[in-house]
Length: 341
Ligand SMILES: Nc1ncnc2c1ncn2[C@@H]1O[C@H](COP(=O)(O)OP(=O)(O)O)[C@@H](O)[C@H]1O
Ligand SMILES: [Mg+2]
View 1 (cartoon, rainbow, N blue to C red):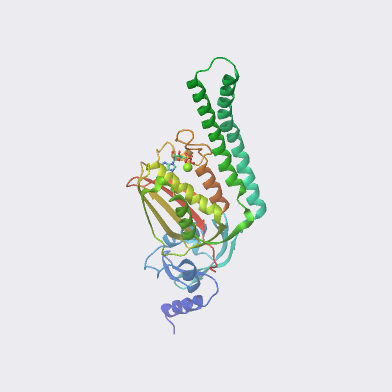
View 2: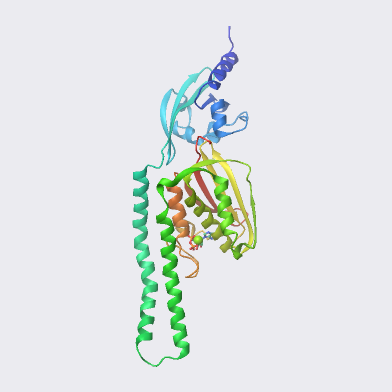
């Protein structure tokens, strides 16, 4: 006669042999076992006794209805992130339920929709660009008219007029350069990337600036998280975030970069600085194209708008918040790629 625990052991050892990720949950919703496939994918340490499904795998918990209903046998599609869809099969076992992830389709950048999204966001930006470019051009136009008027001009007026034109030309150039970098990003150049390598590349590029001379960067580099993406774009995201952090601190302070697994399917990269943080009123507008608090010439307000677009195109998300101990936190979440090379 077998006891329940014998049966559970049997179920566990069967699950361990499966080629699919699987989780055992007791009646209370606590995770009692994760199989080898799931462990391999999530690289979680052993399950801590008593950890609830909602803590360990909030997406599955939510998708399966939260409380007891999720113990009902079902096949449910779970939208893990914009780029990832999974099918979860729930079956009863003597001590609770067993969840098996039978299908996982990383929605590869669908060329069509990625391009449509890019076009849509470019369209959205164009309206802003026209406005942003029109202002300096108006200034340039009236300066040129003044210089052409043939009236007597002091050397000082001439010098100021030309400086004004130069500054406004620079403004336009900054905008067009930033937009050009964004639109150039090739959709077909995606490769398997080690996320910490992308961060290192972005750091290497930004740290050359004198602005970074008195900034100390601390990071954890021990983990290898692989994502599928366009290397230049992912680096651009981190370079923009790092530059903003350095600017917010006026070149003096610390930056912390932490890469952790948010859940079995997503990697989260947090960039925190020791600057003044973001005014609560500005938080909702941060990713708006042309939202900037920097003097003209220094900021185009396109940095985070573009970062946001890139991250979304990669099936991830970008969030901004203030750290309880001060400073701003920019958090990039990206879908982990299942295969490591
Ligand atoms: N680390 C940060 N700390 C404080 N404020 C920030 C930080 N990063 C971004 N911001 C705010 O968000 C605004 C928009 O950033 P961004 O889109 O990169 O445009 P820009 O840097 O050209 O102003 C900045 O002007 C700044 O007010
Ligand atoms: Mg910026």
